[in-house]
Length: 72
Image (cartoon, rainbow, N blue to C red; front, top):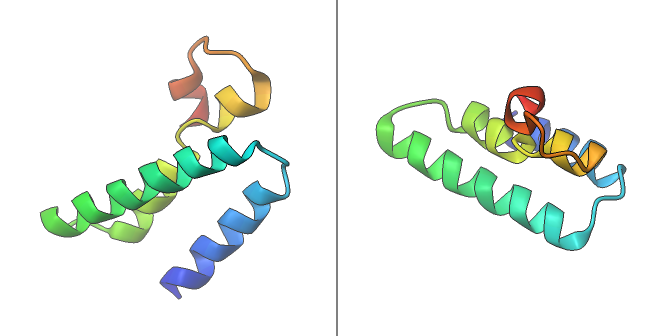
């Protein structure tokens, strides 16, 4: 189940046509978030998803204005 939800989210984001380096950044951040969550006894799936989506508004709008809050 864990991998299936993540694959669906990654597929939806891939369909947006982000640049390769943007996707690499999102996936790298997501992996780090999941690893940290696991070490802390937190939900790695939820943290992976949060890390993966953390810059979406920046990439979708090109605006850095309040992008962290808007991405959340």
